[in-house]
Image (cartoon, rainbow, N blue to C red; front, top):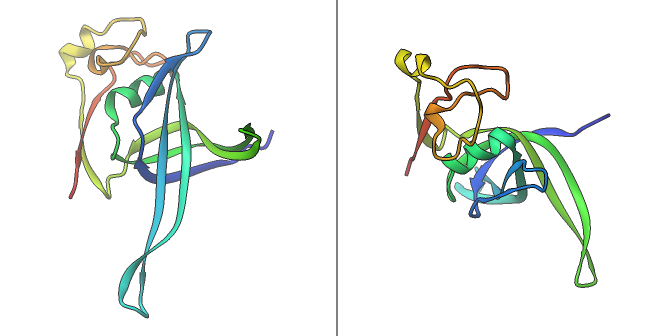
Length: 160
């Protein structure tokens, strides 16, 4: 199967919405805005170019971590599968662009982030099961990828 995989840098422009599917899968969605800014040498000033708005969907462990760490206005880099969906709304045929994220991180060109790694004593006390990571990132085990170490915590600081 051919999938369109892409990476987009932008800003979280909506509040994050968390829910669980009927099967119990954690899901977080938000809108990502990416606006091109380029320097026009002829006029000697910065100009705004094309705009892209995408709905980002995150599932499982990534959904829980995104909900715990990101807020509206945070600059991020999102990688995942891109697709557009057609739907009817009030008799009009509309198209929505969605990105199912496989990885999300802070855009370090536009913010500062500190990664807090677990100490050896945290590693020794690490539980063996997964669980709900919302609000408790540093003490849960990252088992989705077969790991057995606590997930590191990240602090984001916006750069003016």
